[in-house]
Image (cartoon, rainbow, N blue to C red; front, side, top):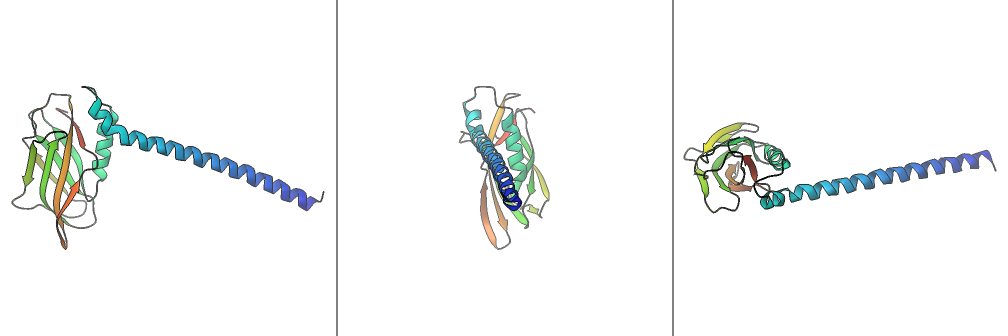
Length: 175
């Protein structure tokens, strides 16, 4: 066999081995990503079905979601046992926002609280707004509460836009 043919076959063999290794890595990574997506999708279900105990990942997942939510995020939330929620809203978008209303209620509850601002807070990009809301209903210290969140806001040239949380705000009562 000629040396050029041997080199060609050697390079072809190396390319085939490299390609199969790359394919194996991609298939493994896609499989792991799919498993991760399934786990994250099941977090709200796991918290609803747990009795008293809650998965430790739920508050972390909720905090990550809300810190990055667009255009409005919640960067801090603290729930007292009397049902007062202290929270920080941040404009995570790239445009000015005027906050009109905040609607929060415990997951699965018809009762909650709606704050409609008389003087609408104006938030520039990355600006924060600290606020507290009472009337959510009392809770036991250490109890995990999931809070449904809805913002109503204005942007330049758009009024009364709504943002619903794809994930509930998970807060440990008294924590």
